[in-house]
Image 1 (spheres, one colour):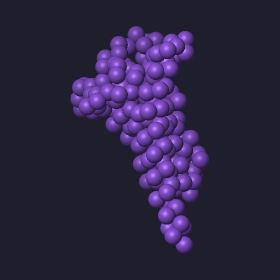
Image 2: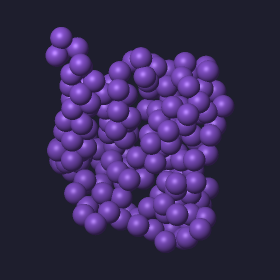
Image 3: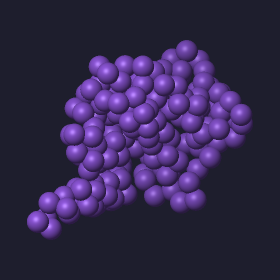
Image 4: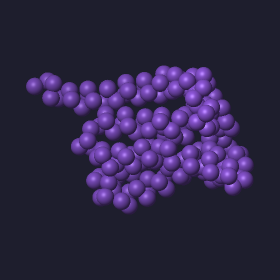
Length: 178
């Protein structure tokens, strides 16, 4: 899995690229939280739930169904998030589902249960280029942890930053023409 600091990269880039008049600060914060929410499934290890189980790591909480549930719950509080319901739904769905997509590009684990409960199959992306993050702070502050950060900068933050910049430029093009 990418680190907890990298999962929010996609919703952050999307929000800043679209602008505050589209994505409110509250919705942005909700999207950042939604992007890390699936990794609460690591608590399953403490309850003896095996990694490969439906409710184990990278199982249900990494599925499209889970992203839909989070988006629906968020839509119920769209007004509090200073957003429109449909915008809230799609932003929170994207933020949540992006977690599993990023995890599918990592070099470790057992794959992502994107289609649970319709399928127990676990999937990886066609290429795994993001180095999987170690569990635990002590392991993260090691040469392996630094390699993970370098990999995330190259494969997540840089493309997200480029996409954000492209969105900002596209958004500002009409005002630049005047």
